[in-house]
Length: 125
Image (cartoon, rainbow, N blue to C red; front, side):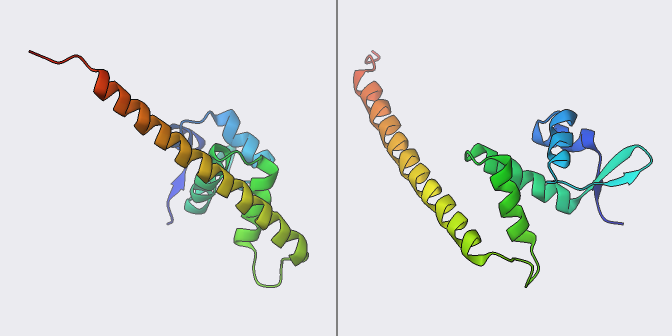
């Protein structure tokens, strides 16, 4: 039997509340199996949750993440509007490249500040 996870296990692993995970489910981003009233999440759900959280950290909306997950898991021939999908991907790529540049500049700045602290640290006798 494949690995199955409870909502509590996923919440603990990813630092989320059950309410947050249920919200992702309501948005159609996760689709756990049911056993009675219990939700059972598959390894695929766990991977999707990891992608959702990464997308959130990068500033994507849940709708954008949903679009990307749909494309990621689409079978050949399921994507109808290729031009729109390609345009959205180009927009996401541009956003990430800008973010990458901002992160690189912030890291350079932190390195500069760290260097200043090193130069200003009191000499030990």
